[in-house]
Image 1 (cartoon, rainbow, N blue to C red):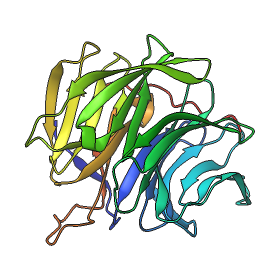
Image 2: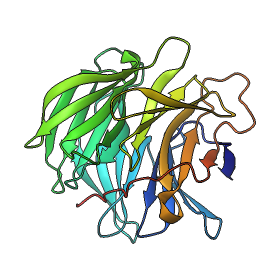
Image 3: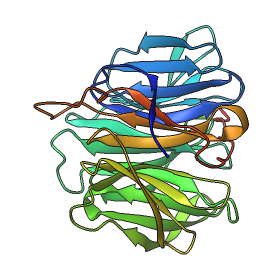
Image 4: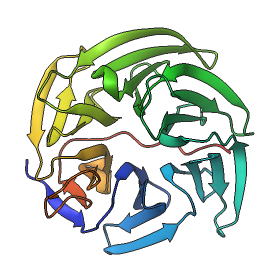
Length: 281
């Protein structure tokens, strides 16, 4: 399994790839570049949209457009580009980070402090009407989020400095149980963004680890995939049949970044992904 270049780019902090089935395109962000990318692998088209402030994630909406996890809260873009806030909650020194759409169509939106202060972030559930419910507080770097295909009440979650992937049991929109699922050992990198495949296995990007890990539903490390960059950030399946695994990457903090750092990579025919649920708002 060898990574190829899907889009050669210079993202400072590429993150959050998501396959938009309605548009047959991949959507991802450059957090610190304050821009949203879209890429159609069938035609090779690549568009970049500035969003005005740091953007942790951008996800498709059911009616078209995008929901975005920004520095100052969660907003949405209509298909014509009109922007409106859903949950406006600016806090000095804090920004939105990774986010994902739950099976019920809500957005789970994470945050962190720019200085990465311990406990400075949170994980919120944003309903389609913009109402916010706290899921987790006092997290540090809220990162990867995904759901088990066998049990939609079971989520996977990463607070990066813990070096763990955790499971979250969710009932009535609230976390009622949190348990360790897998731990990334010293020297293997720091867990960042994740995706769950059709077999229920969890793929995790390893910041400073130069690769991906794949864990079975029982939490056993099943596969290690090396990549030509030191700082992969997240991964998602896309393309025909959701067979291709796309990986975002970063250049930030590297004195001598690799030639492909900041580009979008792809592992062709890496497995089978799950359809992404669009945000219902």
